[in-house]
Length: 122
Image (cartoon, rainbow, N blue to C red):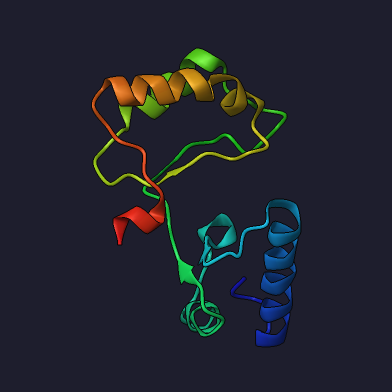
């Protein structure tokens, strides 16, 4: 995003906003910069469009569909890094994430953590 002009950035974000609304009926208010790449310009531009930028506090190498970690390793990595206030980034294109998500959520709750939406943190 930092390399885009303001017009390109606006166009890309608005296309994403529309796609999310069309598919899920949800008006986006948060945005995560792709690859975590941002600049003062992108923060100002997205804030001016009404979005709050949100970064993650945990991520692991799960985005490469050709190099998926095995389920046991992925689950251990995620659980070993749990922390209060965590914003966990799990990529939706990861088959491993999809396969472990149910058991992962149950284990996170068993450990005493709560899972909340960003709105609940305000």
